[in-house]
Image (cartoon, rainbow, N blue to C red; front, side, top):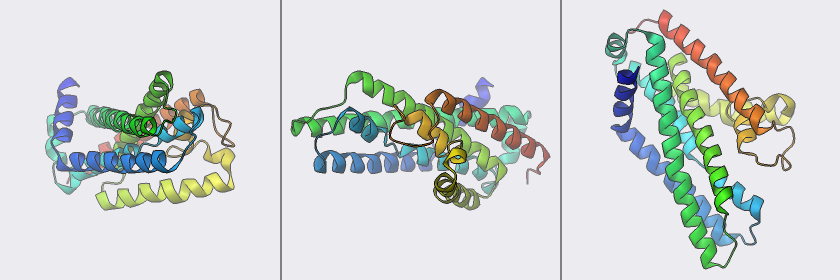
Length: 243
C-alpha cells in the first residue's frame, strides 16, 4: 500500500493540473476575502468564522480527484496502473488517500493564506480579527471537508470514466440537484454529500440555518457516503475492461 500511495502522490504532485487548480483556488478565495474585508465592516465572531470558512479549494479538489481517476482511461494509463497494483481495491484506496491528502494540503494553504491576508486588511482598518482558537477550529473543518471531497471525486471518476462527463455530472449534482433538493425538502437535503453534510461540518452553532445536522452527525454522514462510493467504485473497476 505504501508503494502505491507514494506513486499516486508523486503522480499527483507533478501534474500541471494540480498546480493550476491550486493557484486558481488560492486566487479566487483571496479575491473574495479581500473584497469582503475591504468593503464590509463590523465583523463579529460568527462573521469572521463564516468568512474564513469560505474555501474554494474544496470544489477544485473535488474536480481534480474526478479528473485524476477518469484520466487513467483518457490517457490509457489504467492498464499499466493496475498491472503495477493488481489488487484493484488497493489501487482505488491509494487514489482516495492521495487525493484526500492533497485536498487537506490544498485547503491548509488556501485557508491559512486567506486568514493572514484577511487579518492584515482588518487590522489596517482597525477591525476585529479572528481569534487563534477560532482560526484553528475553522482550519480543521475546512481540511476535513476538502479531504472528503478529494476522495469523493476519485470515486466519481471511477464510476464515470469520461473526464468531461464526470465534471459536468458533479457540477450539476452540486449546484442543481442538491440545491433543488435542499430547497424543496431540506430535511432530505441535509444528508447530501456535497452540500448538506459539508455544511453541517462547517456550521459552528447551527443557528443560522434550518435543517442542518450537527457537526458530529455530519462527519458520520460523510463517512457513510465515502464507504458507499468506495465500494461502488471498486466493484465497478473489477468488472470493467481496462481498455
